Length: 252
Image 1 (cartoon, rainbow, N blue to C red):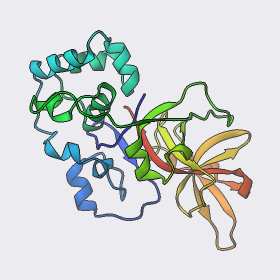
Image 2 (image 1 turned 90 degrees about the vertical axis):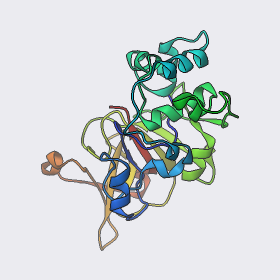
Image 3 (image 1 turned 30 degrees about the vertical axis):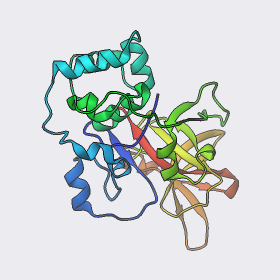
Image 4 (image 1 turned 45 degrees about the vertical axis):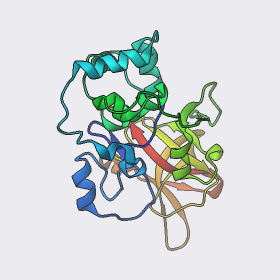
């Protein structure tokens, strides 16, 4: 499954720690953008060529996707881009993917976005180099399979794309900013930032939490979900900080 830049009309995104941005600009891009966080759309200029809100289902678009798939199945593509096979079936019949999914489809298949969406230009485009980001499980171990991301996207997040790690969030304690089963890209060993989202070790399990630093320098892990406010926070030692979150996304 891949995640590459693009905003969405069915997904939620967050890039923690980037500071305030122009709220009006964000809201004009997507009603689902996280408050005070820039849309991933800013990272990839390709999708700015289209008005994603007005495009309609088109059988020719579906035919182009089938052509690009060749002999590969809908299930194969679904696994690569992080959706279910029935969703790809809809795309193969001309439905318009969300912008981020369209970008992932094009990068996986090595096709041009404009050719796929509206039939203009040529089909093939030079593919972006892919980087396999190690997937870290809840115990802190490395899973057998990593997740492929476009190198150009990772370079927006970290100087060294090879240093980035990924984990899948569990539970809803950090919803809505980090939904359950969201992919979380993080940088191990990055400096702690007050108010930012981090990956932390609590009770022998890796969790995604927001860190607050007190005036005395103490650190605590807090949940974003108001429903968990009664559970209080966890005090943290420096060695419990695994890394700082760089990017969060999820498929609904």
